[in-house]
Image (cartoon, rainbow, N blue to C red; front, side, top):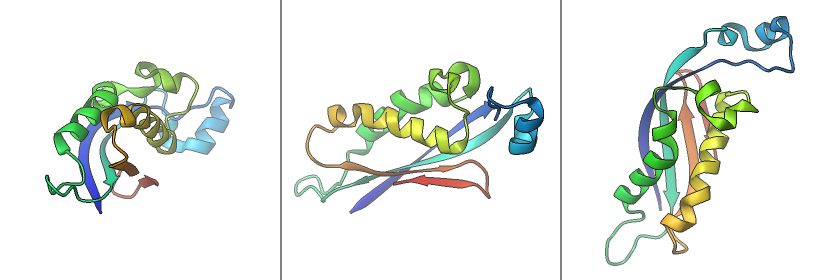
Amino acid sequence: MRVTRRYRFAASHRLHSASFSEDENRDLYGKCSNPYGHGHDYVLDVTARGPIHPVSGQVVHIPTLDKLVSEQVLKDFDHRYMNADLSEFKALVPTSENIIRVIQDRLTARWDEVFPDKWPRLEGIRLRETRRNVFELK
């Protein structure tokens, strides 16, 4: 059984690599390389997988999952300029591909502590940046 919980956060970023010239960044990232950055209203789906607990009837305790996502992701990402406010993006370009990897790293770093039993497991993460851009990590 899989359970997916949806979260939202607003954040801004600039797609820019110090390894490239301004022209190369503009060619690669287009308008997303704007020196002043730009923002998105992100939609984050976190999917947990496991058996249905015989007593609770649940796969995952939703308040526990909500707390984990809030502490590990939302408190640092929501209403932030990722390039400057999140240490991971000092060395990484905050593309959605890198953002979803950072979110996975943050969740898995605490997952076994928060869910000490074998179940549930983190099944996947989905990040919607725009109506047309959706990224999944399984």
